[in-house]
Image (cartoon, rainbow, N blue to C red):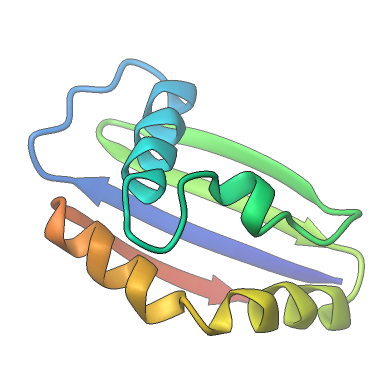
Length: 101
């Protein structure tokens, strides 16, 4: 099993729920030059479990992957655009960190 933890903040945010924060994240990703529908263009490899929480204005997304190989497959799928995604989010005021155990 692999557990992926993504921690995100955005300058000027005023979210009231994790769902609201995730929706804004998706809007910001979808308004980039490389995708207009991230969930269709880069669907997560199934099966995986995801839980999002909001602590103040810090969004944390935890994903549990049945195997490290499935997580690696998903990251390989994103690899071509990973720096583009990161740079686009940074330009919109997001900061993020990711870890996998």
